[in-house]
Length: 101
Image (tube, rainbow, N blue to C red; front, side, top):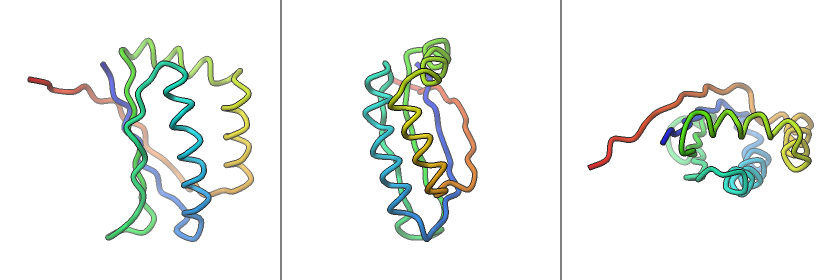
């Protein structure tokens, strides 16, 4: 299993717009073979940092998801919505593997 860890820098005045973006991605990732662990929005501390975590069985499965996103109408709709809202300033993407007992 591989977990994608996303750190977002967001516009702190557009948290509701980012939350809508987040709520739309969770079912998409799950529908496309991943397991979404949620988005985490600012509460205390930095007001412009958010996180997301989701997993796929393998990096190859994640890459397949990324390829399918390009032709998925729902994914394209969310990308277009964010292009209008501009709630995301930047993001970092890292991949991690769990250590399980």
